[in-house]
Amino acid sequence: MMYKHPDVKMSVKFAGWRAFSGEGLAKTMFENKGEGDGYIGLTPNFPFAVVMTVDPAQIPGGQINCKRGAFMAGDPTVKVMPKILPAASCAACCCGGMPPIIQEISGTGMAYLNAGGTMIKKDLAPGEELIVDTDSVVAFTAGVKYDVRNVGSCLACCCGGEGCYNTLLTGDAQGGSIWLQTITYEKLAKKLVTDGSKSEKPAAGVGGGATSAEVMIR
Image (cartoon, rainbow, N blue to C red):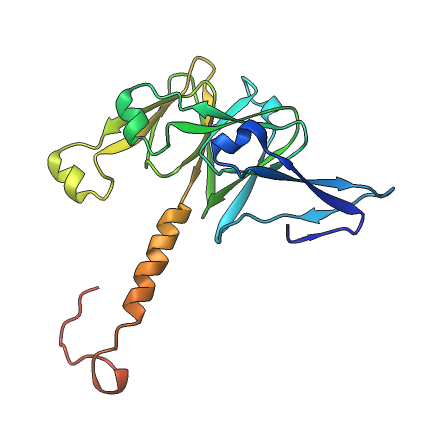
């Protein structure tokens, strides 16, 4: 919570089964106790994040499969439950980028999901396939098939920057929707630590100026 109307009161309740899906043991409830309209400002719990709004009731199947920690807030009717990753193979369960236990979001109200960088939604036609980076998947509708595909040759696995597998998402008979993010919190933290350690090194040259090398490679 960043700010709220004085009439909006806060309470805490036990999170229940949602705690096994990556949520905390307690959930915070905000209720407007005043006669007029109230307001509240909520933010994700990590930097460079974006927030996506989605109504599970407006999605075929009424359910959304999300990565752990993607759920940020929602109406009281929104339910967050742990779910076994519906992976199409053992390789998809181990190498698809999502853990074996994910979040299932359902209900008739508005849910707010957070992700890193830029959020991209892709609607799949029936049987359409989309190959994505294993860290990019935030959520997908219940009917989407979740699998992996080898990136290619041994050289591609070692030097391509994508590892050995990419995530393969396929629409069912009704199609489906997926939501992708451009950067994860883990990647961001690793990048900040790496850049910070580099910045602590003394600069070459007199007085921290440019080096005397004739050729520089970046």
